[in-house]
Image (cartoon, rainbow, N blue to C red; front, side, top):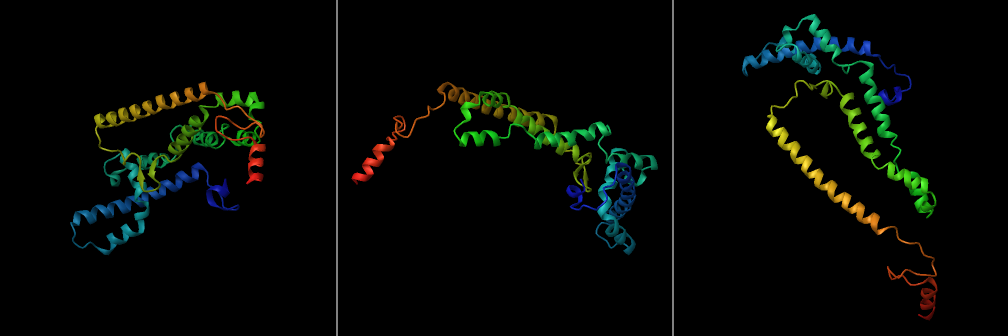
Length: 242
C-alpha cells in the first residue's frame, strides 16, 4: 500500500482518524482563504490590504476544504465547530468500512477479470482451442464478465474519489449542475436508444457468426477451396517449374 500510495517503502500511511484530523485543520485554514476571497470580491477591483492578500495566498490551497461546509451552511465563515467536524468526516465515504470496501473490492474485480483472454490466446495460437470444450463453455458463460469488471472499475473510481470532483479543490456537493431534469432525462433517453440499437446489431452479428459455424481445419496438402488456397505440393511444383 505504501508503494502504491506514496511510491515509497518507508513512508507512513495515515489512518482514517488521522486523515480526518488533517481535514479539519485544512477546513479551518480554508475558511481564512474563503474570507479573504470574499473581501477581495467586495473591494470590486480596488486595492485590499496586504493582510488580506497574504491570507488568501497562504491559505488558498485549502479553500476547497472550506467549500465542504457548503452542505451545512451558505457561508463557511459562519460554520460552527460541529459543522466543521461533520465536514471533516465527509472526507470519509458515508457508511464507514462497509462503503470503503466497495472501491477496494471493486478495484479487485476490475483488475482480476477472469474473462481476460491469455489462456484462450495461447491455445488458439497452438490451434488446440477446440480440444478444450470446458474452456469454450466457460467462455460463453464469461461473456458478461467484462461488463461486470468495467462497472466494478467505475464503482471503485466513483466511491473512491468522494467527496471530491477535483481532489482538495472542488467538492461534489458544490459541483452540482443547474441543468433541469428534462434535459437530463432527454440525454439519458438518447444514450439508452443509441446503445439499444448497438445491442441489437451486435446480437444479430453474433447469431449470424454462430450459425455460420467455425471454419474447418485443413492440412497443408488439401488446400482450401473456399479461400482459393492451392495445396502445398501444387505451390511447390509451380515454384519449381518457374
